[in-house]
Image 1 (cartoon, rainbow, N blue to C red):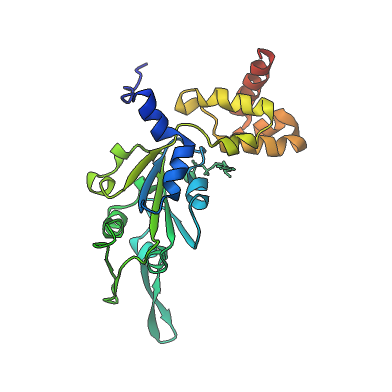
Image 2: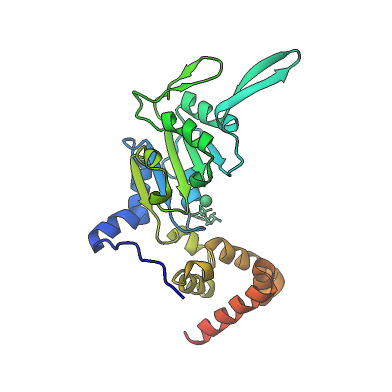
Length: 245
Ligand SMILES: Nc1ncnc2c1ncn2[C@@H]1O[C@H](COP(=O)(O)OP(=O)(O)O)[C@@H](O)[C@H]1O
Ligand SMILES: [Mg+2]
C-alpha cells in the first residue's frame, strides 16, 4: 500500500496560528477581512462557524454541487402573469444588503459558478456584478464571503484562490462541538480523529450515536448510524477502547 505524500509541516508557532479555532474565530470576526476560505475535514465545525461567528446581520448560504446553475446564485427572470420579472439570487442579495454569504463545498462549483464568483470576490473598489437586466451591483459595506470545503486551497483554480483575503485551516473539531459528547464518546471521537481519513468517524456521526443511544442502546445506535457491519466494528472499537482506558 502506498502512503500519500505528507503535506509540508509548519513550525509550531506557524501551525498554532493557522489551525487554532480561537485564531480562526478572530479572523472570522475581523471587519478587515472580506473573503475567507475555511477548509478541513468534514464535521469539524466549518459551516457552523461560517454561520455563527462574526455574523451580526443577515446571512445567505448556498451549497454547491456540479449541477448548481450559476443563475440560481446570481438570479433569473421568472414569469409573473404575462411578464418576466427579475429575481435576485442569494449572491446578488447578499451584495446589495452587505450581508455574509456562505458558500459551502466551493470546489464542487461548475466553471460557470466560479466565473460568477470572480468579480464577487474582488476588492470592494473593483467588485461589480452586471446582471442580465443591465444593472450593475456593487457590494454594500459589510458584504463578506466565507467559503468552506474539505479540499486544501491547492485544489482551487489559482485565480479563485488568489481572491481570498484569508485561508484558514481547521485541524481539530470545534471544542464546543466536542463538549456536547458524553465522556466515553468524546474519548472515542478523539481516538477516531487520529485515524486515516477513510477510517475516521465524523463528529456528526458521534453526535448522532449519542442522540440515538438512549432509545436504541449504544450498539443499536452505532448500527443505526453506520449500518450493521461498520456499526458493529465501531461499537467493538468503542468498548475495547474504554476497556483499555
Ligand atoms: N461551535 C460549535 N458549537 C456547537 N456545535 C457545533 C459547533 N461547531 C460544530 N458543531 C456541530 O458539529 C456538527 C458538524 O459541524 P459542521 O459545521 O456541519 O461541520 P463541517 O462544516 O466542518 O462539516 C454539527 O452538528 C454542528 O451543529
Ligand atoms: Mg460543512
